[in-house]
Length: 512
Image 1 (cartoon, rainbow, N blue to C red):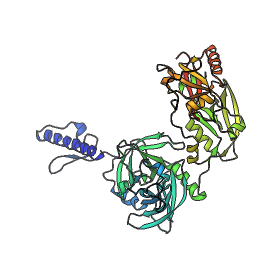
Image 2: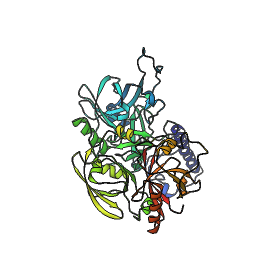
Image 3: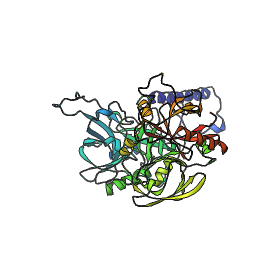
Image 4: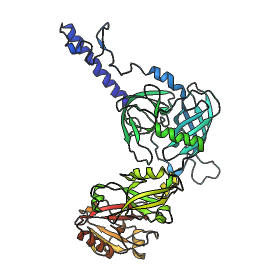
């Protein structure tokens, strides 16, 4: 816990002071390099033992910063209905307080509600407040509490699921406010101060340093700042300040096996937060371009299986029927290496570049297909909400054969450490393959020592494409493997459907 860690550090420093005092008392002369302190600070004579002042650059106290900025920081209390399907789901950084569960099917009682809290801060004198989207998502009633205890009703101006940011508005004027710092940023190792409402403890300040930049924690539009200033549940939406009192980030997530701070927190960078919040204030929403394609990063072994060497990019695994990508001729198996002339090295980079466009813009993709480079021009559509995209792409539960008999024999040829059968009425019933999967070869057995097993393939998975060949039967798969082997390839990318959902391409060793 942070308290214990702090106590340990203080104890170690105190021990160091006692050691120096003992040497001085014995009449020993300090080395010249230590004459003004071990790090160049001045040696201060105390009544009991010498104490070294902090070296230049280290603040003696954060009190002045806190007094300057804390009036702009608020606590946010939210009342919302409970989505019973989400019970047990924990949102990092957001404290959910106890609530009453209404028995399912009881028509005489209202649906259950919960009280939750987070943090936020004023960015204007006339009452605009920044917080996290997940703090106010689904809110029926929002109450803002200022540092002096004033309670204000708040309304949502706009929310952006993609960056987890939201803007609220309260009535009034002359509110103390702070500003985003978008021109300069602290270095890794520089001091930062977080102020917020952890565990509903209003007006809490914690200090630490910038630990790292450009942390990818699984979101599409933000590379986070990692900080070690302790943030906990309830700090979500609160600001991170530099030592000049400028906002350099919005606290959003914590990494914590226990639910409390372990010294790893993540903040949305100020430049991202400033751009998004200004759009939310002016338009009430964020719009982004969309092409209607499912993509994955091109890993090294996947690139090798396509014969692309050390090329980086994003692999297209599926296109939405009737969507912009399909209409423009983009196809599963294509490898996108640049968007509008900007090289992309991963699926996240491609998503961000596409999202910079607006609906109706023409997006130019540089694509490798069958070893040849070409350009595909796509007229962007409007990106659906993150919730809609998540519902469309939600993985189905793993299928291990459904209600099949354990004595049911594997059907079809052995290939790549697996056995296959055609997708037909029998295998659809046996492996719960939905009608949306029109063809392919279903895996009926996987050798435990095979590369396919190591890569996570399993019974019931359907191979719909091998390399650049669409698979209708196990015979198609055998022919594709033979062609790939003849071309000198040591592995072949297989496109997998599991429970009807796209799993992407998996490179499988041909002799594995």
